[in-house]
Image 1: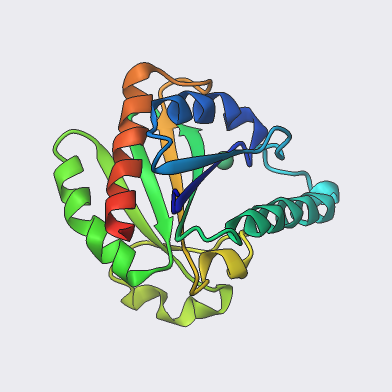
Image 2: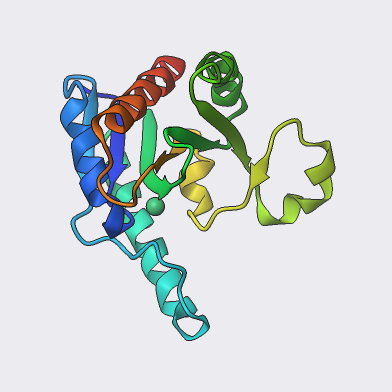
Length: 185
Ligand SMILES: [Zn+2]
């Protein structure tokens, strides 16, 4: 049974990219959870913020129910847009995972740019300047990104055009997923 779950479509505009990447994966090793009706990745207006955050949390809590089935690794796939595509940000709270990916980051930097970002709690602001890598807060519920039962990795791949992406971008995402999976094993 697969111990890795890849989630696609949390942001509905990114579902097309997620489908293309999912097509390239070995489904003996990675299960895919496709969210058919995710939330928009557009920044919500101030008056929509409460609804948006509630819906965001609901979706992630649904994902967490799926994880209950014994997965050790959750990869939350996203896409963005950048002129320097392909490049990617990898978000994780787990130090062992980040340490394992560090040499990969260097290797990838020959051709692509991979940035590792540590997820921290909102209140951890005091230690910002001491951090050895970029840090970020997230709206993803903490019970997902800081859970002893599984490791959460947010993977944001930047595409040249803001649509489903191109073959080299899908392959780049798959390579990163392979590395993340190897680090979790
Ligand atoms: Zn997204």
